[in-house]
Amino acid sequence: MFSFFHSKQQDGRPALLKNMTDVHTHLLPGVDDGAQSESDANDILQFMHKMGVRRIYLTPHVMADLPGNTPEALRQRYEAFVNNNPPGPELRLAAEYMMDAAFTHLIKKGLLTMARQHVLVETSYLSPPPRMKDILYELSLSGYQPIIAHPERYLYMHGDDYRRLKDNGYKLQLNLFSLSGAYGQMAERNAILLLKQGLYDYAGSDVHRLDYYRDSLANLSPSRSQLKELERLIANNHTLWQ
Ligand SMILES: [Fe+2]
Image: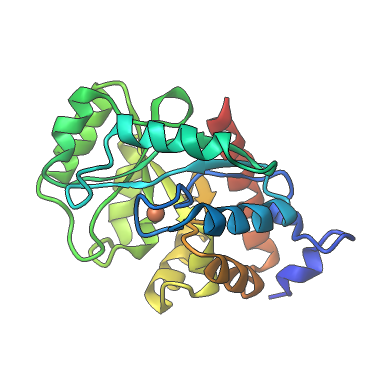
C-alpha cells in the first residue's frame, strides 16, 4: 500500500478527484438525512470543488418513509437551491430509490435519472426486498438501466450474488469511502474484493456531511492496483453526464 496522498497533484488535491463527476450525493438541503441547510450543502460543495470535483448528481433518498420526495417536489427544491447557489461544481438532480413496496408504482409514474435512463437504486442493508429480481427486471423492461448503489454494504449479498447481478446487465456503484473503512470491516472487505474482480462500474461518495467526506478522504489509501481500477470507474462516471 502507498499513501493516497502520494498521488496528490502539486496543488495538494488528490489526483483521483481531478475533474470528477460524483454520481451519488445527499446535498439537496433538507429533503433527506444529508445536508440539512443551504449553508451546510454549500460548505460541502465548496470543499468538493476545492478537491477537484467538477460535476455532481444530487441523489436524494426516495422511499416510502419520505413521502414528500416526489419528482415534482424535488425538482422544485432543486431549482430553488441552484438559483441561489454560489459558483462551484455543476449540479444535476437524480435520486437514490429504495426498492421498497412503493417503488413499482413510482416506476410507472417516471423516475429521476442520470443520463440515458440510468437510475440509482438501493435496498435495506439487512435484507433484500421481496421480489428484488422482479423489480430489477421490471425496471429494465420499462427502459431504465439500474445502478445498484454500494453493493458492498448489503449484509445479505455474498460471492456469486454480485456476479449474478452483473450477468443480468445491472451496474454496480462503489461507495468510495467503503475503502476507507467508513462503513465497517465487512463493507471494506467486500469493496476490496469487488474492486479486485473488476465488478464495479461507477464510484460515488454518498456524501451526507462535510466531516465525513473530509475524514474519509484523508483515510483513503488505495494500493496502486486499486487506484488504477478507481481511475477506470471515475472515468466511467463521466459517461453518466452526457
Ligand atoms: Fe446514498
